[in-house]
Image (cartoon, rainbow over all chains, first blue to last red; front, side, top):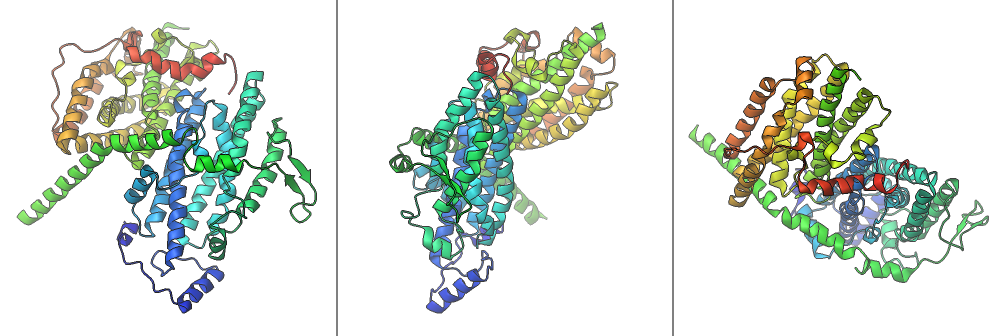
Length: 334
Length: 253
């Protein structure tokens, strides 16, 4: 209800040099920007874009994993997967709420997703043909998401930063769960081991792409860093992810699908890190532009759920209206 | 296995199958619900049901004493060996059918678990203690939806009534009593029909009254699940459910 009060409110701010300087000074003092505070239009726009893309990613991300709920191999795995996919929906819900504090409605954002105007994380345009993909998503995709999201807990925009604290706790649980799942496959029969390796082969490179274009090509980075919306560059986060994940694969006897991967002592200011091969940026951009294997299926599934559910939402509104009319009538009669 | 234990095992398995299959159907909605809130609520209820199924299968396996696990019972039987009632296996059709199916079932399980909570079987009574709280929420949540849809728009009212017409003939099987169930009733472990039916009827009447729904006269109740005689769509449900266990026999997951 709190955020609804902000929908359609006048959010215009006169962006004089004095105002912009004072705003930047607040950011530099690590003060949190709150919903009712004046803010530059571009700051608001950037946050709406980031938070809504994040929310959409959670919602679309329910589909590839949801694909295995009815086929999970044991009851324990079934319950864990169901709970995990439900968590993603929960993240979507409070991220949409965080976006609403900036003056956009969930309906508006949903329309943008369904029309194809809004983007979501491209990783979810890859398919989940095997059970091992559920492990790979938890381990690699949630693992990469955490690298991106932990710094967002310190984001300058208060509602986003606070939402991310809870999201990160749950994501880190999912990451451990995914790693545990894929570890048990890696320790299993030859068929299971092969299934785990195949999933790693398919998900490794798309996971690296999750950090976005290289710093030299990223169009949003500089201003977002100055506003402390982002704290690290795409390439810095990607490097952290590689350094954290390679030893995890080694530990369970899986091989990264990158022949150029090797330890480099001089990396990370002499602390060492991994050199890795060139990302296929053509594939990245093709999938971003909608040509991946599952892009159309994902949007069609979301659109179908929305369209098929229209009569339910209309009925709920109609019933609520009747209830409220009856209440008013009762009050008038009294 | 003593005769009374055999009866109890078979009766527990019936309830376990009801919970697993209903939870499985509900889980099919995950990611495809009419609104985000329901994408959270339906998996939540599915988690309750499958969680209860796990306890019940584990207990059935102990009673059986053949060293089988909850997963052996859940995944590695043939269709004729599942004894869930037919209603829980019926497809989701639409949101009206789904909410009504949940309501019918929850309205039955509430007085069922309330009785079992105080019954002489300590394992079942501890399962019941948690289940009765969960199922009360299912009644509330699904009952509210049945009212909203029944009262909402012309379309929703029509869909809701169609769901009642389609599913009501399956409700009689909830009260099915075979030798196994009867033996458990005689032992005071499970409730008799006269304990459960009036409360079920009261819950349903109260909801239907507000939802402006009429109950069709059922001249031929649809039965069979408790004897392992299932609908055609059940085979497809099992094909999905059992896929991994059948494709990779003996593997640990």
